[in-house]
Length: 442
Image 1 (cartoon, rainbow, N blue to C red):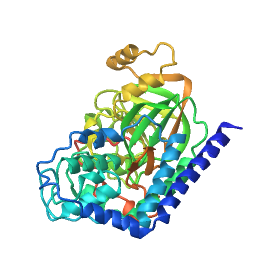
Image 2: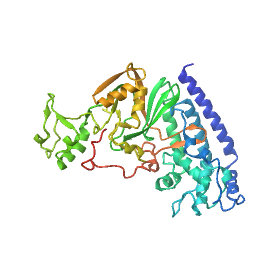
Image 3: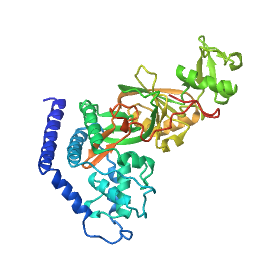
Image 4: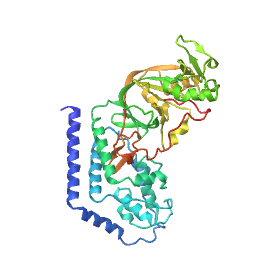
């Protein structure tokens, strides 16, 4: 039996087991589930809860949602199928309540809305049933909210702001449909992906470097906005360029650079961008009519250096879209909640760690040599001795741990429900911006 057949067979068995579990639970009926919830609500009071402290709360915070299981693995398929069975039961039992409050809910607050919040978090498995129901936002609730936020790609600060509330109030049946949609995507990647490979999960805006079936590195990323999306593709990384030149794509020349030149004729020189004609000759910017209807038919090439849009590193992979992965001088972008701001290419946080891993089998390129080359500032293309598979995929719902179900916004509106789209990305679409901004790398 082939590896893929074994995976599919085990996957089917796992699904049947989870379906059987759901069937047994569903047999008990909605009334029993409702009674269980009423038992929680009507449980004996445990004081005002303001003085309660969960000594084991760390087990339910953000760290408890981290795993080195790859998003494309048999374990992920099995856990996602179990999550589907769990959410089918939740839906058949009436779902979860909406959480609405005139005040921001956070540690120390006492408000009637906290009762609904506790019910919501108990049903989704973020808060232990034994924590009970009260008006107090205590340390139990704080840990549960942080766990919920981590599962949804939100800052795990324990404060229920606008985006956390939006995620809480997406109904269970919508989340179930999202899981089913993404199960199909996960199953399509159930074959042999290679001993060493890279995955870019676009809606999660992160990158996995996988080796021998485990995630050895995970990187925060910035990916394409909805109007200039990062393409879904299977490819191979074949080259790393240290101190790269940046050649502006035509779309960025027309949409970004030309309007900036109309505002500030010194923009190109400030950012070390040279104009090159078809014969390889440099053209002076002041000889160009920047108010012409069409952008000049020239190459816009930025020299290596600190202002370069790709900073220290460019990672090339085979594709027809002129996309690549790269470093950035704008490191603050990785701290943003909505990291959907590029023109298709992918910015990588801590890219040098990924570079060292990619060049491990390429003779002569130790970490020390890589760092020394970057400091020297010379443009240095390096062909990988062995190309590394890379998969750009679109997964918005999955599970790699029992009971820990991950959800992300449907940034490109591919999941079929408007409620899932742009929940935390409203308002991020930018124009070319201020003149002092660096050019937008793809």
